[in-house]
Amino acid sequence: MIEVGEFIRAIRKRRNLTTTQLADQLDLSNGYISLIERNIVSPSLATLKRIAQALNIPLESFFLDPDTEIIYSYLKRDEQPHLPVEDRNWRLLINNSKTNLMGAFIVDSTAADKHVYSHQGVELIYVLEGETSISISKEDYHLRAGDSLYYDASIMHWDNKEPEVPLKLIVVAIPPEDFHF
Image 1 (cartoon, helix red, strand yellow):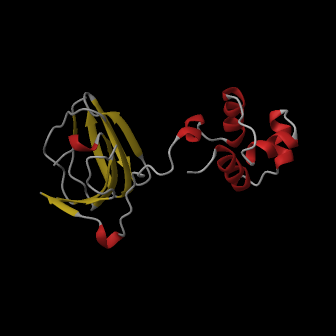
Image 2 (cartoon, one colour):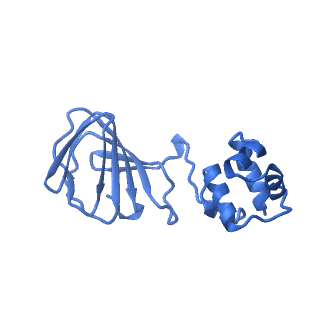
Image 3 (cartoon, helix red, strand yellow):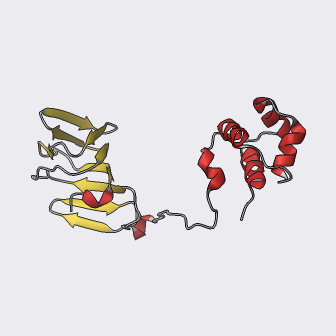
């Protein structure tokens, strides 16, 4: 298990800081930083908080067990599952797992989805190619390549026109299990 001091040293070096520079930022002595990094002394919680702020890391990172399984998803393009649904092809960008905190997809579409949706969570749509028009409750949003739309997915939402050219979107949904399949 990595010690706090070793962790601080690793992050400090990744930030290209010397012990003197870190000590100056914290108004501590260079020697004290050196003792912390060599695990000779244990800093107080208040000092750890200041170190975390100076290194721009969350305070809780000092207390995580590095032996704990990391939740991640790495899919090469040819490994990304495709889900054809009507006139849309959904490509999963994150493994479909119960541990996922979000769902992320690339959607290729040649027609508007005729369904009206309302579900728990939030969604983000980013248009890679083409144009679309999305209605959320009483508001209509015309989106072109480069536009994004973030909204509360519990509000009724739907496509309100057929795309004139093929459409390619990135769609992110939180939580993932309450999505359109």
